[in-house]
Amino acid sequence: MGITGTEPVQGYLTATGERLRADGCEVRTEDWGGVAVLIGYRADFKLQWMATKLHLFTIAAPATLVTADALQTFTATATDYVLARKGQLRGLQNGVAVFPALVGTQIEPAASAWAQEGQRVKFAAVARPVTVDVGTGTASAYRGNPMLGFVYAAHLRSKLNAYFPAVRH
Image (cartoon, rainbow, N blue to C red; front, side, top):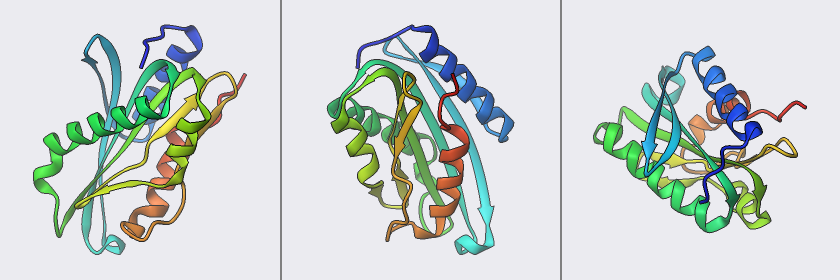
């Protein structure tokens, strides 16, 4: 994952932080190995989720070139981060979800395809990777209804649409 400081990428990340705050997320930036990473967090409880609480993290970083390997590595890192913070709560009444997003100007088709093919699942934890091409405004992610974690599908799709809309030129 090469680092990019291009204005469109930084503008998209700034706007994403604003969208997260507007939705009630706690938002901060952390340094991940010299890269400023945007982190948003919120928790929701709903009876229709079998009375569970979902801890949702959105973790977005700039990248020059987004490859499938870079997205897979970032997804694993983001998932480990989330599990270290809220993973001890996973189980009958708690779940965690993460949107690991790489935002750039060059997205390899294989990266977008990998993001769209499905969510990544661990026990009571899901990751829905996202690629954002600021040049075309395309945000690729899995927005379907999975077998595992289906009760959260509409909520996750709604949050993906709110946090990662098409770029307006």
